[in-house]
Amino acid sequence: MTTIASLIQSTRPSVFRPLFQPIHAIRWARFQAFEDSFDPEELKQARSWHRTFDGSQLPRGQTSYARSSGPGGQHVNKTESKAITAWPVKDLLPMLPKLLHRGIRESKYYTARSDSLTFQAQEHRQRTANSDENQQKLIDEVQRIYRETVPGETSNEKKKKHAEMWADMSRFTASTADIPAEPNLSTKDG
Image 1 (cartoon, one colour):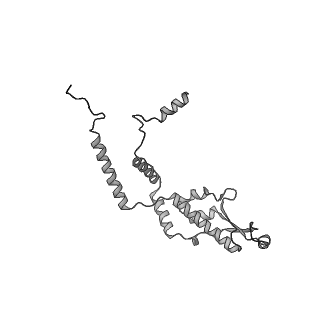
Image 2: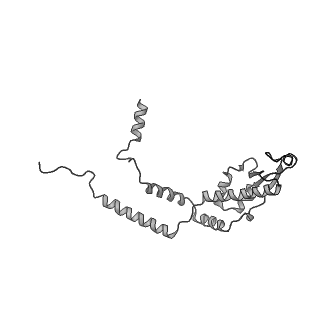
Image 3: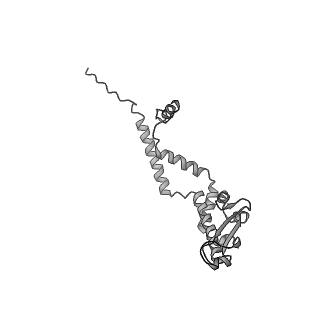
């Protein structure tokens, strides 16, 4: 019973811990800390790399073939059309900005044993189509890692609007500091 009471008491709002925190303050602090953790030069380099990025900049990878599974009849049983392509991380990292290096090794396609990104495709009946699909999967994965790692640029309009919002909020908090905590409701008629 004491654990339930302590749980209720720990979630109950108090003077020091209000029930609702202002969302904009939490959101600002979160994103401010996120953007401050990056080196501005690395951000600039990553963003300029992304503007010029296309899949032709990446290496081709090492492809092996195996028998695919699923429907296809005799063609599936006799040919090796499943493409398994591995890109060694040591070949990929020089092609990518430094901010993406950590995300490459944290990818779900990363194989620690061979220190590579490995993709498989068996949707097509032709080997080359499956190999090309693996190349596209690598491009999509690099794009995903970029989107999750590098924050978007903030426009000057948004920066100005954000500064005005904080100025308004600081004026509001300064004006509410003069209001007494509990209004005096007693009357002198009595």
